Length: 78
Image (cartoon, rainbow, N blue to C red; front, side, top):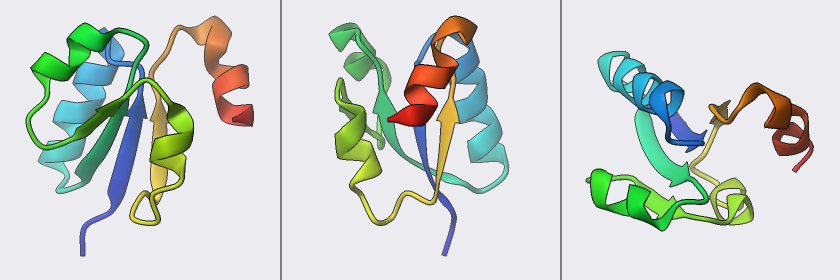
């Protein structure tokens, strides 16, 4: 069974993280972003504006924080 990943933030770093995860055989299960327009860029991953939904998924084993640096601490505390 592949590792389940949630990506928080889907700007440049989030897209790079998604590509790296795919290359490593990691399943990107959730993408969390404030921008609803991100949903149109996704195929398999579930989109949400709510981090709590991704964190509640028992299949998520890891979270990649790809938001602007100044927001990392707040996201990590969530």
